[in-house]
Image (tube, rainbow, N blue to C red; front, side):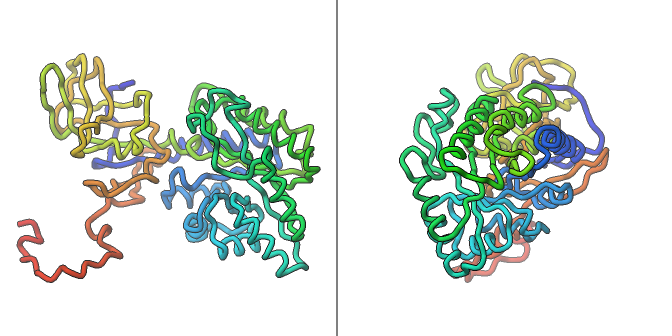
Length: 415
């Protein structure tokens, strides 16, 4: 969908712009849904979705916990100011040392691999006077319970411990024998449609496992994958009420904490990408518009099927039946969208892509161009929070042993 208009205080392109007021609105909406339905809860933010340091620090100031899935993300959380007791530590590749640190200082650690179970048992035996508490990620068949929702094309999920084949029970037995308390279940599954039915299935399965294994849980981590939009459904309130209905017969909601891990549902909508037309070409019956943006900026995995929501700032008011919007890279498939019945674009015109905050910055690479700048909009003012990448940034940390020839100063300066 294309809009036509202009806006004051536009950044130099290419650049991401994060609207802080929209971000606050989404955080408030999710927090209010939790307060309405499950006050004893934790709103955490999935670092992997967008790990912009300004954003992570902002989330911390808003009281949103960190949800991390690697040693690097754990250290990043500490570096931007998170206390260890406000970090949810997930993921299958924790190191032994970082797991030990998290178990000693953090309240929520969900184990995802057999070596983590083994290490937790060993830690517990080293200090029998202290009871360690862990959560276990549950491996479950989403397609069986919600046909058509799996993102793995019919294949099983590889994460967590499967209850049906006995691996979940074996992990619990190993931990119990070592004196480790199983205090939580981690139920996260990605889905194709983000429907309420997925969360019904997840909550009901958690209730079944609580009964089967006679668990007294401190937390249930339902994961992320929520739909987030200014309009439309499901709403955050509908998600949390659905989860509550599936679990309230199995847990005391005043005692057992509900943990949610939204990522894209909080950050996708608040982020725009600003680009500029650099050339227009005619080939056959097609009008190709080349920009200083790329699919690598706004759809880095080249998977997006639906049209982008865009705004056109064009000098011309003449409407063109079709324009193919292309990126700056040398890949033929770097085509961002097709505009139909939109203003005629020419060199210097601006195209703004909306709702592109999820995973775009996380997957940013140095392919052909370095990562673009990032600005934060507060009312009508813009603040630079990440400058555009440079050759110096790229070379930092590298060495090149064979670079013996000197380059003339005039050449290095580009003259």
